[in-house]
Amino acid sequence: MSKYKKFIPVNTPLINSEDALSVSKSIKSGWISSEGPNVKEFEKKIAKFLDRKFGCTVSSGTAALEIAIKSLNLNKNDEVIMPTFTIISNAMAIVKSSARPVLVDIDLNTWNIKIEDIEKKITKKTKCLMIPHIYGLSNDMDKILKITKKYKLFLIEDAAEVLGLKYKNKKCGTFGDISILSFYANKHITTGEGGMLLTNNYKLNEKFKDYRNLCFGSKKNRFNHHDISWNYRYTNIQATLGLSQLKRINKIVKKKYQIGNYYYKHFKNIKNIILQPNKLTYCKNIYWVFGIVIKNNKKIKIDEVVKKLKNKNIGTRPFFWPMHLQDALKNKGYFKNISLPNSEFIAKNGFYLPSGLGLTSAELKFVKDAVINILK
Image (cartoon, rainbow, N blue to C red; front, side):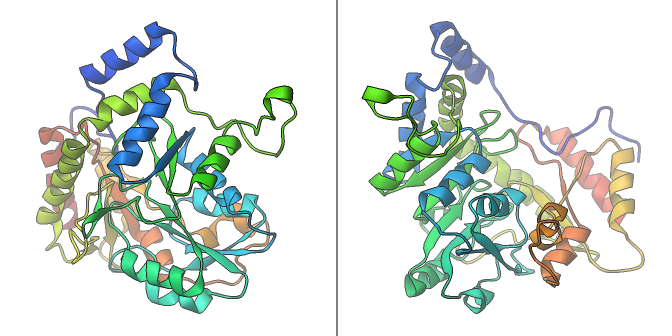
């Protein structure tokens, strides 16, 4: 089987002519900074889409996580429980605040946090759960909410990878005291970079707006800043692109599901691999990415598979690296002598395939055929 005529990256964003025209109009209008009218409009429309009272745009999903943690007024060494298998932004936000991340392994079936292990990690210092939905599949939010209610914990819901996904009859992004989104280039809606915090709490939203904008002082003395914060503002140009894409969010989610479902249908019977479920009783996978985990065996090794795909001009990306194995965190004294085997296993043996919205039918078929040929 020959290689594809051009390289197929893991993500090809889809920016259509309507998106481009909207951005062009925004630039020509002169409204290019965070003061532009489309920023508030985008916040309102995303909040409405997710049935939240307030939305606050920021410069990235990472920025949203940092502001979320700061807004909860955690004390030094207060504990935030999170899965070890996720993007490092989750742990970094906690560490930067001087709180402490407490790690839980994942469920090998869903790749989300192992819910039955959460209560084992709760102490008197536990103040918050940070729960990301991984790779397009929702956590079981009824069980998560039962824990937060029982122990009176805050919930930060990281919905960066699942905009448009429903848990039962409610969209992900509606469950947290604070929920966050990302609009990075590989997300369901992209504005290049960007993120958003969502809440139903007015006071929290006022904090978000303060913290993203350097905590300026009163009108009498604007440049006497009242707290340490960031310049994490979002631009009118980005918001304009987001508004344009939001108009077709349902089509975007449908296409992502179709891509993931196509792969799943053709790979589900391959004995040498593990796949994330196509659906569960409470949700359908909308496939932010399509992941494959190579089972432990002597015949097939992940490095060989990735190399063979690369030789066919097919891009891949390794899975998230667990927090307890991160040099940046271990070197600071976090997570000594911790073993979380499920996360270690899929991180060492997992990769994901091209699944961007710009992926063509011919490219999709070529990737599918290549994977089957290599793994059979």
